[in-house]
Each structure stands twice: as structure tokens, then as C-alpha cells.
Length: 422
Figure 1 (tube, helix red, strand yellow):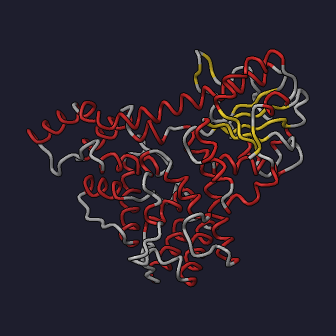
Figure 2 (spheres, rainbow, N blue to C red; figure 1 turned 90 degrees about the horizontal axis):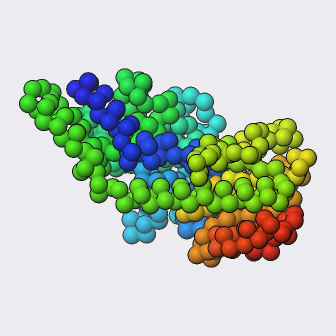
Figure 3 (spheres, one colour; figure 1 turned 90 degrees about the vertical axis):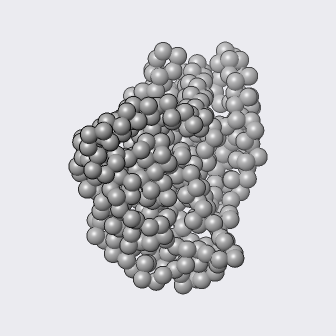
């Protein structure tokens, strides 16, 4: 079956609708790692301080798990395992302070680990406590801490793994997750030329098999059985049309996000600022050119030396003064996804130094998202944001007034006039 798996993985990589193309290679994916890690640290801090509370709704845990759940289809539903189910009294980390502290210790331990052995030791420790409802769905958090050591976990990935390997991994058991991880590592090593050091790739492959976008090769496939499976694989593009709606919506979101970045780029250049485009977006194509055309190739040393420089480089658009001594405006474009990652990047800029304008932080989103953004900003997880005077810049106002501001505006007055303090 090995050669058939090689064929299948090749087809999966080449398919424009596969998780490899729509999620693993998605520019926004890597931008979320730092913010999720920082969110996990906040959960640990609140648990250790005894301030986490006994509710999932509105908690810092809901914020980060929610941002994971928005990471395209592969993580859809990642928050279900953490939702409080009162009739079942699970997951029992809201009513039991002891279990909550054990959960915090696991996250803290894994945040500080450098090896798989250390992480697995932490998993075995929490598993021995048999906390009701706290199973391997937690591995989705561990993946964002250690993407080369721990794979994500959900029903579809389990189904795909069982279909490809003939295993009988069960949901909800940590020992089965650890066994599946070992099997995924073997798959990853065998087909390393097609996969990645980041275990998200092999997880994405198994996910697509698990949702039956691709069918696994039959065990012991020879002769007519083998030929029939290869013929079925050739028709897979057509049978995958039922997935095209969500994929098209995701791509439209990417296009709009890039378009708004281009508006802000052109406006900043027109009124005399130096412009920085997020490091992983600079090569995106827009109107026949790259998004980073005419913009800075690198940030000034004063910013690159900041503690949060890795995160600041990923802010969607920065406007700097001509001397590149000060960030005059920072823009995070939030088309459909959670504002969490963008807020964390702005916090890194705002709290790392005084090299930014106090009233130059903007969340840019569709007009219809204003109340949603305001609601998110009021969450306890964003308690440090209130003093930053972050402003909401709606798409409609930007589109309507950007040409006039570019032609007649100077400085920040125009962009501030069409935005609103949150």
C-alpha cells in the first residue's frame, strides 16, 4: 500500500481544495502561533493566581480556543470540548479548583518543555488524574506550543488515521492519542519529501481522508482492486465539489483582506509615510504586483531589537515617519476571524517601547463587525487594552474617503476622523 499512499499524498498536495493548500500554506496560519502561545500563558497565569473563575464563557481560555476554532475547517469545532456541559458536569475544570490547577500545570509544563518526552510525561500525569471531559482535545493547544512535536487532534484526524493505517484509535483517550502520534510520526518520516517537519501537514492529510474528501487505499490492494481505487482517485476532484462553498468563502476573505491592506498601503504612501507590510504578506499578488511593492524591505533596528519584534513584523500594515524613527499607525485587518491575534500584536508594539504614536492603533473590519469588535474588546482577556485607545476603522469609511485623504490629507487627521475609539 505504501506506493499508493505516496500517490494519494501527491494528489492531496496538488489539490487546490485540500487542507494543504487552503490551511497549511495559508499565510495567516503562522501569524496566529505567537498570539495563541501568549494566550495560553495568560490562562496559566490566571489559574495560578486563582482569578480564572468557574466559567468558560468570557474566559481567556474561550478567547484562545475560539481563535483556534477559526483556523479554517481543520479546527472547526475545536471549542466544543471545552464548552461547559452542565448535565454531564464536564469538562470538570470549572467546578473543581483542583482539576483546574492540574490543567494549568499541564499547560505551564508543556509551555516550558523542549522535548517530546517531557510533553508526554506531562500528558501521562494529567491522564492519571482522570479529569472528566478533559481529553486529547487539549492537544490542539499543545500543537500551537510545539508544532513539530505534537499533532492536532479531532474526530476527522482519528478517522483518517484509522483508515490509512488500519488502526483502531479511539476518541477521548490520552493513551490512544500518544499511540496515534507515534504512528503519525512514522507516516511523516516515510513520506517526508511530501510532508513537513510541522505535524500540521500530516494531520491535514489525515483530516481530509477522515472527512472523505479523499479515500484511503484499500488494505492489500492488488490487481483490479488497486486499479479501481486509482480510478476513483482520478475522479476525486469532481466528488469534492461539496466542499467548494466553504473554500470559496475562505478565498474571498483572503482576497478582501489583501485588498484592504493595499488600500492602507497606497494611502500611507500617498500622505508621505514609509509603509511596512506584514512579513508573510509582502509577496501576495494584488492587481498584478506584489503587496510589498514600494514598501520597506526591513524594519528599523530600533524596532527589530524590541522584545516583541517577531510579532510586530506580522502586523498587517505599519505607517512610519520618513526618518523611520516612529510608528505613526498600526493597522490589523480583521475580515472574518477573531480579533485576538491582531490585538496581541498591537500589545507587543504598544508595550515593547515608546516608538509608536499613542493614538495610532487601528482595527480595520467590515462595518457590520463594529459591535462584535466592541464586545470582544470588553472581554476580561483584553483588560490591558483599554488604555491603548485602539480605534475601529470600518471598511466603508475607508473605501469612501481614502482617495480624498490621499489627495488633500496630511498626517493622521484624516484617518482618525473616519475611525472611532473603541
